Length: 342
Image 1 (cartoon, rainbow, N blue to C red):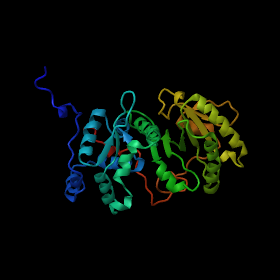
Image 2 (image 1 turned 120 degrees about the horizontal axis):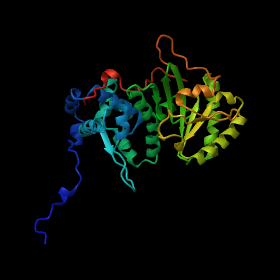
Image 3 (image 1 turned 45 degrees about the vertical axis):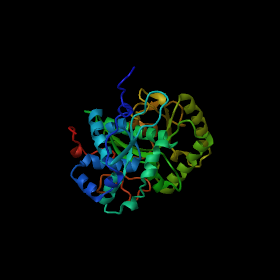
Image 4 (image 1 turned 90 degrees about the horizontal axis):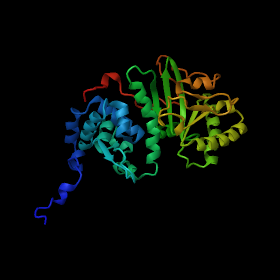
């Protein structure tokens, strides 16, 4: 007979102690945070505001030398109300922790930009509700394609750099009246630049809807005079083959098919499904003799495609339909802000 049972509360999982929400929202707490948040913390806040949700693995890829260092810092940012976290349900095993922006982080971002917090259109319930969103897996998977590129750029001796990464929301603000891509990116390697729109498909989108996007991309290229490759990620080789047939049929109906360069890949085309740098991209159309190319070699798939043109005096690449008032965060933390000890 058990005479001294273990209290039920002692069997619960550990939960970090957080002050009450009213304390986290107070001016005193924001002032207390001012001397404790590093430049990397502030950069991470901006990245989460831009890209909505990151897993622990993705945050390690972005800005930390080890997972242990990331967990230690993320725990503090969670306790301080800068980040909110959740762990989605999994029937087998467990998902990594997912992080979104919390109230103190949004307030910090607003004050740094000299605007009222309400001008950010931030809603804590909406951000926490991403744990139940049907788009969560899609958003996380899209982000993984880009965070893997950042990891490549940070590896010792690695070549290449992700110089631009725009979220679906930012793309929608720029081109939403014509196209709604899942992301926009630019990669620089060996002095050459490539840019692309990303379309990410889990195999759930109707073929007719997916193929009809080429018509809108043609309209954007005709309107702006800028031709940008479209990279389409698909879950299986079978899905890729089916989609390529549908896209080829649509491409033949376009007035200017050369303005819509398309390349596809699938999760099994490389060792790492999220690694865009592997030789996995196959051109749509052409003479059928081209194999799969690396991201840095996309220009070899379309030799006639002009290279992105830098803005005069800035060294930054031009972006189709760019608006100067919308400035995305840097895709990688500046080297001078990267503290490997914390």
